[in-house]
Length: 123
Image (cartoon, rainbow, N blue to C red):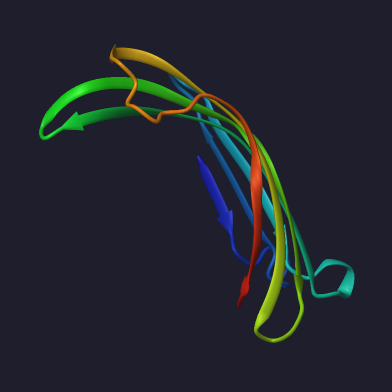
Protein backbone atom coordinates (compact mmCIF):
# COMPACT_ATOMS: atom_id res chain seq x y z
CA UNK A 1 0.00 0.00 0.00
CA UNK A 2 1.23 3.46 -0.83
CA UNK A 3 -0.21 6.93 -0.25
CA UNK A 4 1.33 10.16 -1.53
CA UNK A 5 -0.20 13.63 -1.30
CA UNK A 6 1.68 16.62 -2.75
CA UNK A 7 -0.62 19.33 -1.29
CA UNK A 8 -2.01 17.87 1.95
CA UNK A 9 -3.56 20.96 3.61
CA UNK A 10 -3.56 23.32 0.63
CA UNK A 11 -0.24 24.91 1.60
CA UNK A 12 2.12 22.65 -0.34
CA UNK A 13 2.68 20.11 2.45
CA UNK A 14 3.87 16.75 1.19
CA UNK A 15 3.20 13.42 2.87
CA UNK A 16 4.16 9.93 1.78
CA UNK A 17 3.42 6.59 3.45
CA UNK A 18 4.38 3.17 2.12
CA UNK A 19 3.98 -0.25 3.65
CA UNK A 20 4.79 -3.61 2.09
CA UNK A 21 4.16 -6.85 3.94
CA UNK A 22 5.33 -10.27 2.92
CA UNK A 23 8.65 -12.08 3.17
CA UNK A 24 10.20 -8.72 4.03
CA UNK A 25 8.41 -5.82 5.68
CA UNK A 26 9.27 -2.45 4.18
CA UNK A 27 7.99 0.92 5.29
CA UNK A 28 8.55 4.62 4.67
CA UNK A 29 6.90 7.67 6.22
CA UNK A 30 7.79 11.19 5.06
CA UNK A 31 6.43 14.70 5.61
CA UNK A 32 7.50 18.15 4.38
CA UNK A 33 6.12 21.52 5.53
CA UNK A 34 7.37 24.14 3.03
CA UNK A 35 6.25 27.23 4.96
CA UNK A 36 6.77 26.71 8.72
CA UNK A 37 4.97 29.08 11.13
CA UNK A 38 4.28 31.63 8.39
CA UNK A 39 7.95 32.01 7.47
CA UNK A 40 9.90 30.91 4.37
CA UNK A 41 11.40 28.08 6.43
CA UNK A 42 10.79 24.46 5.47
CA UNK A 43 10.90 21.45 7.76
CA UNK A 44 10.55 17.78 6.99
CA UNK A 45 11.37 14.29 8.13
CA UNK A 46 11.57 10.78 6.75
CA UNK A 47 11.84 7.39 8.48
CA UNK A 48 12.23 4.13 6.62
CA UNK A 49 13.22 0.47 6.66
CA UNK A 50 13.63 -0.65 3.06
CA UNK A 51 14.73 -4.10 1.92
CA UNK A 52 15.64 -4.86 -1.68
CA UNK A 53 17.06 -7.86 -3.49
CA UNK A 54 20.04 -6.91 -5.66
CA UNK A 55 21.92 -8.74 -8.39
CA UNK A 56 25.43 -7.88 -9.53
CA UNK A 57 26.07 -8.81 -13.16
CA UNK A 58 29.08 -9.01 -15.45
CA UNK A 59 27.77 -8.88 -18.98
CA UNK A 60 24.69 -11.13 -18.64
CA UNK A 61 26.04 -13.44 -15.94
CA UNK A 62 24.88 -12.96 -12.34
CA UNK A 63 28.00 -13.03 -10.15
CA UNK A 64 26.33 -12.08 -6.85
CA UNK A 65 22.87 -11.89 -5.39
CA UNK A 66 22.13 -10.31 -2.01
CA UNK A 67 19.49 -8.61 0.09
CA UNK A 68 20.17 -5.03 1.17
CA UNK A 69 18.41 -3.39 4.11
CA UNK A 70 18.47 0.37 4.70
CA UNK A 71 17.15 1.48 8.08
CA UNK A 72 17.24 5.17 8.84
CA UNK A 73 15.78 8.59 8.74
CA UNK A 74 16.45 12.20 8.01
CA UNK A 75 15.48 15.66 9.17
CA UNK A 76 15.34 18.49 6.64
CA UNK A 77 15.52 22.23 7.28
CA UNK A 78 15.46 24.86 4.56
CA UNK A 79 15.29 28.63 4.37
CA UNK A 80 14.44 30.72 1.33
CA UNK A 81 16.96 33.58 1.23
CA UNK A 82 15.71 35.26 -1.95
CA UNK A 83 13.56 34.41 -4.96
CA UNK A 84 16.39 32.36 -6.44
CA UNK A 85 18.43 31.10 -3.44
CA UNK A 86 17.52 28.58 -0.74
CA UNK A 87 19.78 27.28 2.03
CA UNK A 88 19.19 23.75 3.23
CA UNK A 89 20.42 21.33 5.83
CA UNK A 90 19.60 17.65 5.63
CA UNK A 91 20.76 15.40 8.46
CA UNK A 92 20.56 11.75 7.51
CA UNK A 93 21.34 8.72 9.63
CA UNK A 94 21.28 5.30 8.00
CA UNK A 95 22.37 1.75 8.75
CA UNK A 96 22.99 -0.46 5.73
CA UNK A 97 23.31 -4.23 6.01
CA UNK A 98 23.61 -7.04 3.48
CA UNK A 99 22.72 -10.71 3.47
CA UNK A 100 24.55 -12.67 0.77
CA UNK A 101 22.47 -15.20 -1.13
CA UNK A 102 25.15 -16.22 -3.63
CA UNK A 103 28.58 -14.98 -4.72
CA UNK A 104 30.38 -12.16 -2.93
CA UNK A 105 29.43 -8.54 -2.38
CA UNK A 106 30.62 -6.21 -5.14
CA UNK A 107 33.71 -4.15 -4.37
CA UNK A 108 32.77 -0.82 -2.86
CA UNK A 109 29.55 -2.12 -1.27
CA UNK A 110 29.52 -0.59 2.17
CA UNK A 111 27.92 -1.76 5.36
CA UNK A 112 27.60 0.28 8.47
CA UNK A 113 26.24 3.53 9.76
CA UNK A 114 26.32 6.93 8.08
CA UNK A 115 25.40 10.48 8.98
CA UNK A 116 25.61 12.94 6.12
CA UNK A 117 24.35 15.66 3.78
CA UNK A 118 24.44 19.38 3.68
CA UNK A 119 22.82 21.29 0.82
CA UNK A 120 23.13 24.77 -0.61
CA UNK A 121 21.68 25.79 -3.89
CA UNK A 122 19.58 27.93 -6.12
CA UNK A 123 15.91 27.27 -6.63
